[in-house]
Image (cartoon, rainbow, N blue to C red; front, side, top):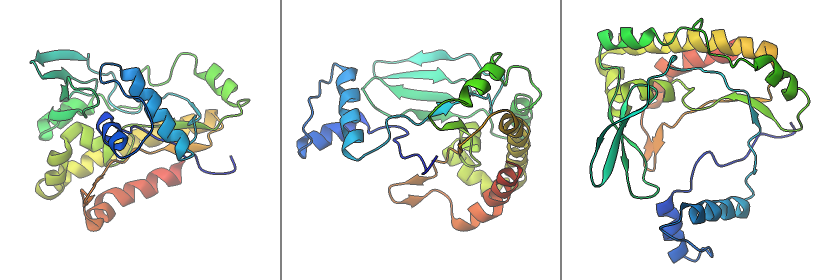
Length: 240
């Protein structure tokens, strides 16, 4: 690679595209046709010079494993409530393009954490695909950048999926020992499985998922980042 990848991870949202059309974006949108929004998003991507391909991802199960069965737990006229593969309950609007909202999280205290912790062991079978060796061999001859990681591999993004955004922001202050145990467990897991991946494959970059800011600023303070997240990032990146 001669530069870092430059691509859209997600979006733009349907609501953003609708607004941009009123502001001059020259695309055709049909509220009944999701494909029209996908085409419009591709137009925006090309306008700003984003890469069309983020590269070749080698999949490693780096989070809750085995995953929970995804099931619909409730449905109303406006929303669908689902249990996700990582154990939370999320509310999805039936309106095109609305973001999922987390209604409940699998970790609320030490007892619920100990239950989820059983699913964060690096030695659990199935974390690497059966054809891992073949995928690594193919990655060595591809012309595209090779990467691993992705959502929710990050020291804010991962715990946020387990505890919830508001729950995690409060837990930093109300139960820091629990946060530290969650972070150390994830760091141990990721070092174990991703150092193996790096031994096997020619990675060009690692995809860290951190979604810790809103339009008005970060969800956590610099001091919280330095106290809780930074030591784990140093340990993890040093291992890679």
